Image: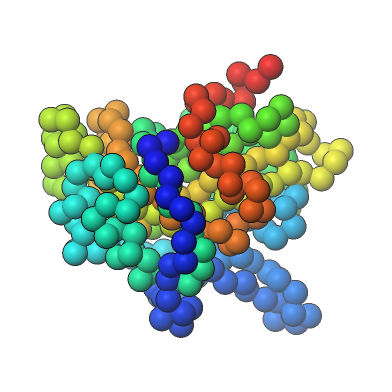
Length: 276
């Protein structure tokens, strides 16, 4: 954690925003089917189900095929932001977002690129230990995208915070020359800044089913800017700054849980095996 801003209203009417949160309804009956992050009016990510007892989830859909960088702030983001309000970055990206309350968090992250089903994958690791595999498919949840793991820590004895940075498009779509440029800059001491819209989902399985029963706090940062920077940082083992705009009221977490994030994010990193 570097610095936290005050909660503020950002964004435009949903019909004018490039991103919005939405609910997909059943064709019959009218009940909720999926929570969605929508980009340019197309479903881009499926999010954790409303019940709160289903496994935590982000799953890339066909609509996730565009980066959302803004040319007007690219030069400022090449280096490190030291304050969330520096350089008008929040206002610039706020124009992409749906109107709502957001908590700005300026973080330092050291990303580690993870592929689904491989070493370090949360969905086939920590999540399976708690929820087991999907009862229909007989497999772990599958996010349909590589992603970055950046931080985790204990919330309390029965809850753990997991942090993820999710690219809008997979790293294989990145321009190799730009990634190498950032690797070189980071080797010279530059710490660039990425920008994300973020959600907090607190999920806990129903009683009696898990092997290891506890709450999973999933802090997910969906990248708006910084796809090349995150891959370069993961390649070089270097930190980047991440300006997170946490969408208050859009995740599966109450106001008190969201208010705890700055304190939790300032704690030392610890994994679940470190618990007492």
